[in-house]
Image (tube, rainbow, N blue to C red; front, side, top):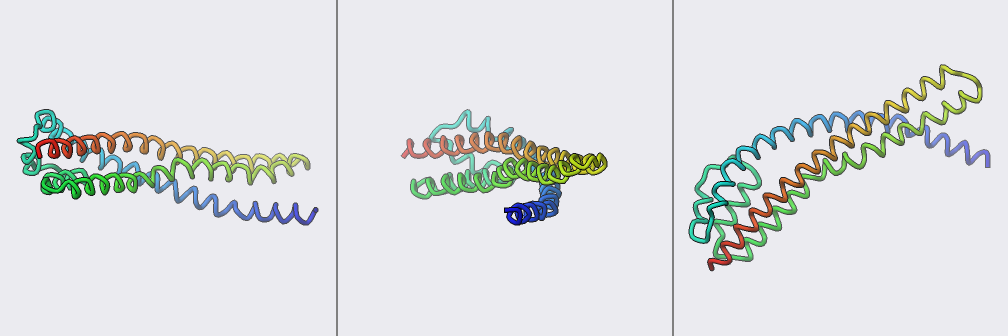
Length: 195
């Protein structure tokens, strides 16, 4: 039994370095996600300023005007143009909506992953150094306790930051994509109603 306990201890302590490396990698990935989120936000702001007034006054007769308006490049713009251009085919319009929904889910994958994996790695990075800290406590080695606890708490903080960034961006982008999808479905229904 003692051998099995030592084996489990060696295996678990062997995961400390990969866990810390993953935390560092995901932290920089979260920083890049913040930067891309800002670019996405600015592009969305320009698109919404132009599209909301057009959609407000939209009816079955003037749907075609949406395809001629100069919107900033985005997946929403591409889906919108494909829906308007393929007005005669309901099957193609449905496919465009499904493709857009799948694309939005793919766009949210990184934020979703960060929001879940960051705290998990933070917890793993916290629990692994606690083992030697407890051994140091039983030996009265305060330096070992302080060092291991510092490593553990640093992992927790980084993991929670990663998770927080992922969660906040996931919530905001999910709401935005749902708004865009609702607008696309409205345009699709208007075209269907006119036909």
